[in-house]
Length: 426
Figure (tube, rainbow, N blue to C red):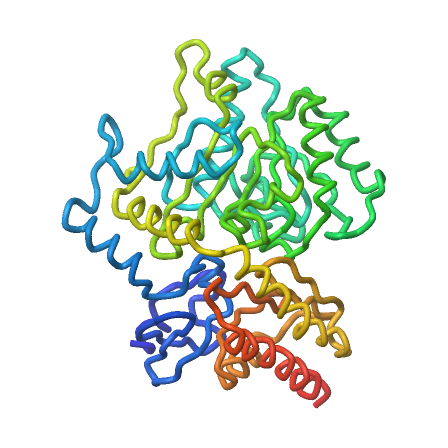
């Protein structure tokens, strides 16, 4: 199977012939992945930040089985169903009260596409044909579909090959005020100037609240986000917050925007929405924006085949019930505390530029790009699964990880970084 996979199956951000050995996963339970070889390794990535409850969760399994016995899918055009309605009720009850409508889609990237369409259609329906640009941020990442790519960092991002065909948007400097740092108005200067100069053509601002994820795992001051909200209001520009990676407790608040106590016009969520069981995302929007979109008898022009898939919605309902009825904040705070105690010692290693920690996120930024071919098997030898990229070695473990398991992760990171120094000197 591995041989066939290597020859024929394409993997994300990888050449058709992989440069690293592929690992065949046989099963998963709790925080462990069991490989075909029989090894069990701790997943420090939550399968790209989505598996917050761990794997093979009885409550989520039961929800999937129960829904399968009823219907796995039905079109959402002209029809509706209980799992979608219940999920909408829950999401609207736990997010900002300004958000009153919800659009379900099948991936995070598509939820961003929907948000951008909402922003464009909002102004277009008002008769304003000039507002066709989005103001985004350097080092931001919002997905791999074409609209989403157009608001990702065009220079340091991963989409430069498509520069010639993407919609041209406007970019402000990445937030430079780190989380917990003393605020200075200079940090918002570039964004303010970009907005002031271009607000007549800007439909919306989009950013990842508090943590810029795949663009660099950078954590910034809540005051920055608060000032962005204030300036968007002042210059009559919509604010889209992309919580696909940060939502559902990852940063220590249920949603990262709560650190700044701001209210978005449009909110995107995904990843952990189903506990990582299957692909589902949602775009939540204010009544003002939705009514604006529909001015003149218009409707939002989007409709995925698998919109509000009943099976995914049923599992999402079970996942949210499990999260909201647990002491998730205590778990995340405990993870943060342990990371600050154990991971911070990596700052003493000469190859490490900086260690950043917030909630259940731990990041090592190295002084040079990692050698993934060398590093991945070194982690596996120590019983953990991590997937570094560029200069970053980071963990975003499932919330159910215990102290010993998390200690195994942090020890592995420290030991591999020490071994990496020796390897680079050879």
